[in-house]
Length: 162
Image (cartoon, rainbow, N blue to C red; front, side):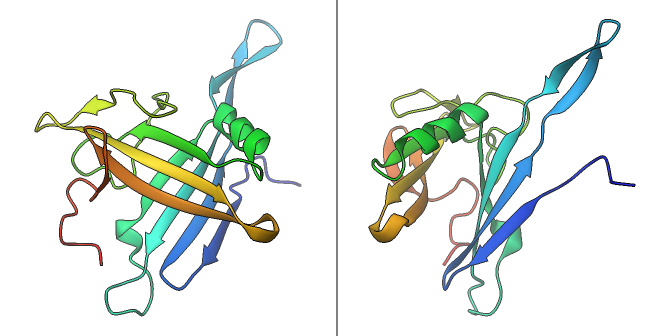
């Protein structure tokens, strides 16, 4: 008998980072006598895992996650490989190395959105940039922006990442 649930996951290992891709399938609920409706929408979860400071292995506890909605996946498919795509999501809480957009909240798309206020009053956003390269390749960059200024360290990880 075939299992009723699947958890597809792929990881690509590079010299400085590993990148994981996981499909978070939608969940359905009964609706009416014989109907079905979507209880929780599906997502495509991207995880960026830095190499340990020692250079051997990866720091899985320091991974940064970025979940893409179905609409964002459609945007990527329509824009790549011809155009670069930049998406931003609010970063939730001071320990948000991996939580934005994963708790059922809808992410904010595009630049210039206000994001979510942190405990200290700063606005923190995760920014994912995907740039097409030669031969159909793409380069992924994940960054943080604080009050609209990119290149910030993830909240709560100052001094932890190489």
